[in-house]
Image 1 (cartoon, rainbow, N blue to C red):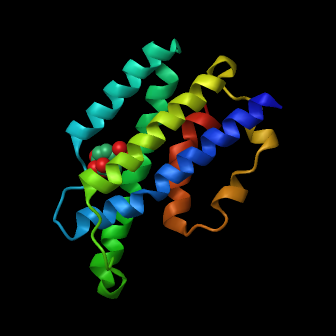
Image 2 (cartoon, rainbow, N blue to C red; image 1 turned 30 degrees about the vertical axis):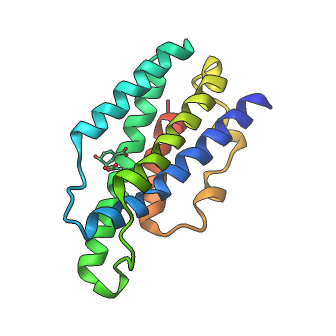
Image 3 (cartoon, rainbow, N blue to C red; image 1 turned 90 degrees about the vertical axis):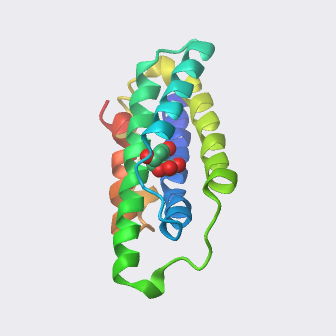
Length: 160
Ligand SMILES: C=C(O[C@@H]1C=C(C(=O)O)C=C[C@H]1O)C(=O)O
């Protein structure tokens, strides 16, 4: 089942990107950095568009997927900021470096997601995904905030 296999991996990568939102939030919270960074967002969307052209795939599916990924990351970050404001003892003990430590991990995931999209895009939209693949298995261990973010991040895959 190549179709489901491709999209399963794509969904797993998307979930990993959502979970990196925790590190992004930790990097920003103690340094007073804004959650929303429109310059960085545009850089990502431009890079994804350029990659789509290079890979010879339509620009729109990756654009929609990354737009959703970015929204999902901000849901996680906003949720954690609110949680840490309210419960100071839950604040992260360590402040990771956004530029040197966290964004390079996001960039690596971007490359992997683009490669996986390349593998799957000829069968886009993934109409059979929801029949054969259970979102529940992936979101089960997550708390409500992360479940919500994962659902947003996968919307272009689940409801194309
Ligand atoms: C993840 C970050 O936070 C936000 C979400 C982004 C993303 O998901 O790539 C990019 C910029 C920010 O608006 C970040 O600043 O790197």
